[in-house]
Image 1 (cartoon, rainbow, N blue to C red):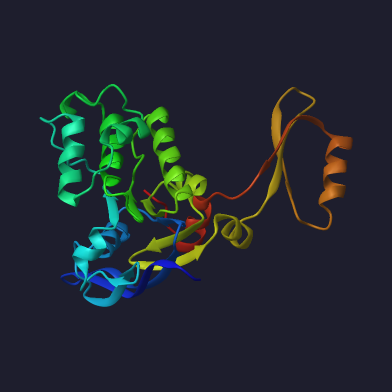
Image 2 (cartoon, rainbow, N blue to C red):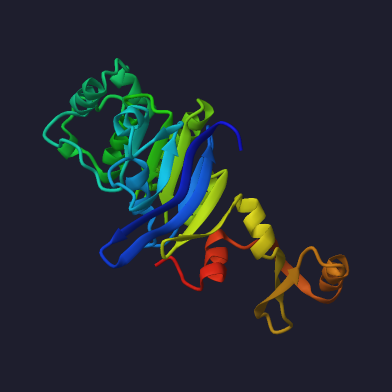
Length: 286
């Protein structure tokens, strides 16, 4: 994989006797969206804190844009943007003043009003952040992460608990940043969100990466595709029939279904990333 944005080599972190991240290895290409998936406590946030220079690895190494994050922290942090799940904005200040403050810290001359427009907060820049809804605050957090026009964007549960409109706005921002060449490292326990956005996904469980590939390949490897048919019985009751796809007799089974049953509805179904995670790890995401 050429033009690597992130390289983790045997990256490890312990809290006392607890190994939160256990010698993990992965690479992320420039311009790629990597979904880093797992339940709460799996090691997602600890990994992000090491990659962004907030925690020093106990063992191993992380390289971002060719720089060692542990040794060249300031140089790396100047080129990354970070948006955590918990908002830490200055709520007594306006949205514009929040962005202007962080732009000055980075020495950036970015157009902060344009940033607000980009995240769907046009016309609300002079309002104090304390008057914002949760979704508006999260969009402002994303805008703040973009003030230095980062080459790598770290997003921790960016749409968790948000309304559909705010969630879709943030998804569109992520895709827009990718089109500009930004690498996105997305941590989440929401498998559907990751499936919509990610070029590849990594499953982390109990501090270890247990699978890493494209959503499509993971579904091919671990899941099964099927046709789900709802049929009406003689007494009016409805029952579901399942026909597995990609089998030698799939066509014959479908023809027989229509010949012998009264088919009411028909749709295809494939394994979700959550189904696959449970299959691999034996645990759910809650």
